[in-house]
Image 1 (cartoon, rainbow, N blue to C red):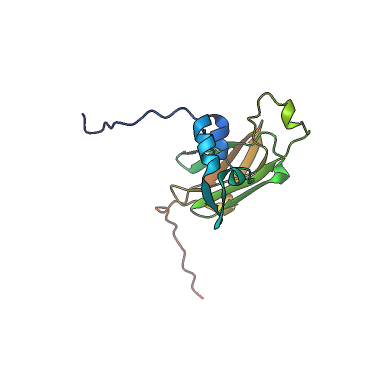
Image 2: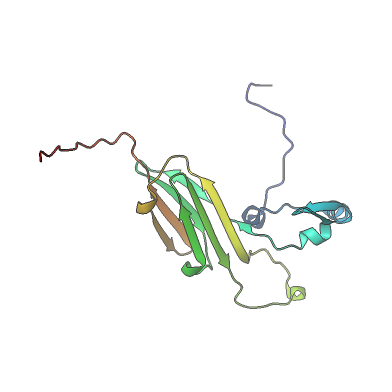
Length: 165
């Protein structure tokens, strides 16, 4: 075995729904077993079936990369109105929150497949470098939200002129 190799069981590929919501795929036998167990949700013991039905907040999938001058954050927010998005930025962290609401109601029994995520979502990410929050820009185009965060240049120098009074 090489220095960097490791034996790992191959995990099944997660669906987009599982990545966005943070959910985990459960097999039929695991599902039945999980429903019979007691779990702790917010300090209260309840059955797994009751805990499973609790509304959860979805988690956004993000791309974070850099250019020489900026940190760029991108995520898909298709179906979300700009007034339903909230972006909070500090020097070293960004939080994106929002909600995607269904425009029509369909009976659960009428669905053949239901994979789209509806409801509230959020994501907080620590940034790899300090940024200037006051100079940040957010642009949504065709469902893709792109946030430009200018990096703080710690090597930047400025000369200060001394005035005589």
